[in-house]
Image 1 (cartoon, rainbow, N blue to C red):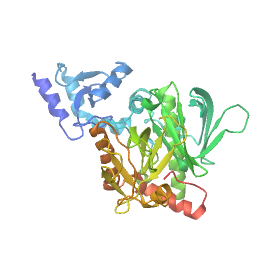
Image 2 (image 1 turned 90 degrees about the horizontal axis):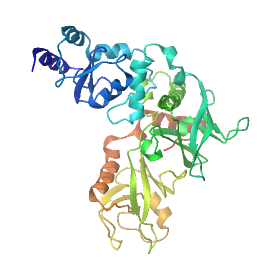
Image 3 (image 1 turned 90 degrees about the vertical axis):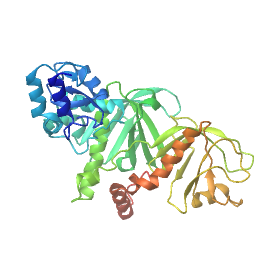
Length: 395
């Protein structure tokens, strides 16, 4: 190894440089020697796709570092100095991606940061920082399993998102932003820019699925919704920090996938259902893109609520199961029937035991980590609902 390569490796191990400048992954393998940042394998691929006029990259070990000026530049800059420059005006509402973020979010963050330089000049953030937004997205029909173009309008003044089937007509649906979550779900929608909007209307949880062929447009809508929700919270709860208010503007699902579930009646058979663990709600559907869940179980706290491996005595013992129970829900589902000793309600399973264990760990983890349900934002929204009765929370 040359002296220059040894020096660049030494610089990459300094605090701040030992994680990726863009996604903060600890696997740093590359550097952009004209931007002064150290990168992981995933992010360097996006840098290279932007072109060498934006970012010039080199592997820390495989490539030869012969230019002394490049070494000096990396030494003088590094991740902390470069990020302070390129993220100077990063909005509070902007979700900074990590190594597990959907590909479209990571790519558009990197392009916004270096290619479009949106965080150097607030005027370049008009796509998601304005108080209103209007445009077209492809939306999946409720009954027809196909996507059609629909016009969407976001209004910060009314705190709503609406979509229209026909121009000049009343909106087909108007959704309260405070009763809404937006998640990026490319695999589920089978499109790299797929989004799922979950909202509450008349006490019922509903989903709509949308996408745009342009990744930037998709992320602009995603951030615009986050910005409008944040501005509402800033007015409702002045004096609180941005970190508190942005804790749960939007959230990804903890886990999704196919499981088999048995009903509460004697003689019920196991049926394949699509399960979604969304915050502290476990929803199941016939198909992944169903607009309304067949059932929703609100996950409580021990000791009234428990997760258990196995099945109640007398139940059909298939493969390793994850069972969820809730006393209040049991009364509704089981009626006057004798309840199992642990008040077990749903019995989903998967033929591979490790898959069932993933669900058990995910559900148990809700109580260990005290997720978004107990976050500052959710508590604030609930207090606001109690005062005004105007908004409904998803949870």
